Figure (cartoon, one colour):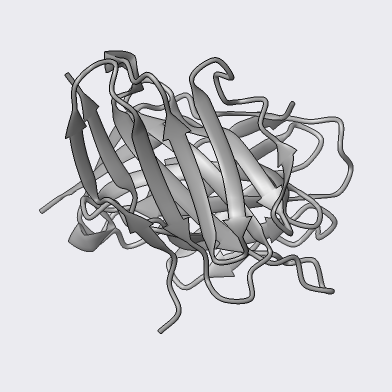
Length: 116
Length: 114
């Protein structure tokens, strides 16, 4: 049963600390998205990658957030330093655009981050 | 960038009745995809229905159907014979071709009452 795996599921940290969230996309998927979910903003697109290269990271605060794909099986989202306003659920999703162009995204279960 | 707007933060419906969730979007693209995702309390994101912009026929999946109005940039979801298990947050989403730039609305929290 192929699935997108995210770790950690829950993270509580103090303001100023570094936070790293990890995502293992479904094997064979070449596109990875990162989203942030809050009550006020819904699901915000932070960044997405294709074949490990960033296609768009305009939704990400550049001064404290960074996203990368060290290899095809791992995507990371790092916040340094973390702030209380970063408290949210962070979702990773993966997919591959098939020839028929009916690409579908498969979501992980999310990482709930609380910054005190 | 594309934007997706869901103007109903919360809605409720009686079990077995019909409810319609609204969604509008803004884009300069001519071909694209639209989606409705369901998020129950478990946080899992579940694809409900998908519509290709180049198809005029509205998509249907069992009790779920959409009303796609391309000129008006409107994409509403109708749930017929509502069930308690339909209680969830529903997100409307827009995607450019080739799995690019998928964006979501703020969501509508739907409660189905017994």
